[in-house]
Image (cartoon, rainbow, N blue to C red; front, top):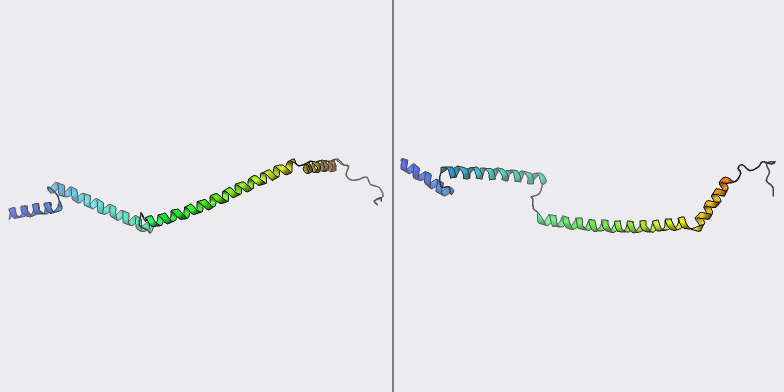
Length: 125
């Protein structure tokens, strides 16, 4: 009976791919750790709502984001171009003779005597 139990044990170890009982326990610990890690991965995937590594979805998302980036860069370039035009126009206006003339006229108005001399209150024509 002992020989039969030993033979059955050896057959079991051989079926499990283990050379002895210590090897069997090491393999069993590895199996349990893998099962635990697999459960953790499944829980994480469930929280995300999608299995990790869905290449088609990520490829689609990449295309969508690339299009958005291209459109944003295009709008940025247009805004920079418009700002350059506005800056050039502002400089042109600031350097024009009309602004100098208006500044001189405005200074003249500020230095003119105010209120005008009072007479009888009626304006003369």
